[in-house]
Length: 247
Ligand code: 13P
Image 1 (cartoon, rainbow, N blue to C red):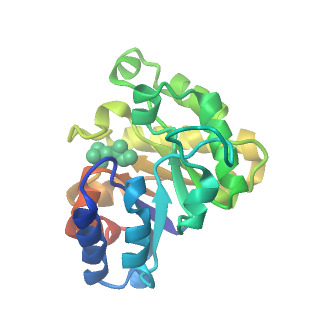
Image 2 (image 1 turned 30 degrees about the vertical axis):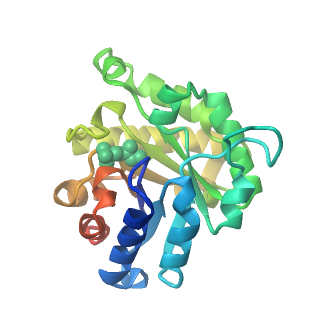
């Protein structure tokens, strides 16, 4: 399966930083020559700017969240149809920072993922255990609950991405061991077979949590790891490009 390397810029930078980062990605080479797909997810206000800057580059654009309904009285929210309208093809949903900052539940994440699919976007549904859950040997139970509760039912498998991001590995410089990553990704694949049947093989399962150029290759070569969701290192065009070249 062709890997996906996705950059989650989170709430970082101003317009000039977004423009420079997008320009930087273009100057490192032709994304069309990579053996993976590249995606960047800038903050909402800069989506249009980044779409313009990346035009013709084959780097895809994604949002970091969307609402579950197409329009209406939801102050401060963004509809999936709006993301599609400004050129997005993906949207990150249920990131652990949304789950903790905004109390998002599995049911809400699933509703958002269904809205994303209806709008023609590919949802990237995030799951991952906290350090407390990991220390309590709850990792697989948490992953199972989140996957079963957040993944939209009855969708085309080729239009779904799941990201495993252990919360304790995000922004900490700590990564799960390759063996742990392979174990959790194998479990996610098994759960997906139960949810989408044969098509589960087509769902890309990304690893996220302190992915850097020097650990990317080892993580990306584990069984059932079909790409990476990169935070901090995606804010540096050279580092992000180096990760993409590890595929
Ligand atoms: P870091 O790569 O900074 O650990 O962030 C991972 C992440 O949360 C991507 O969504």
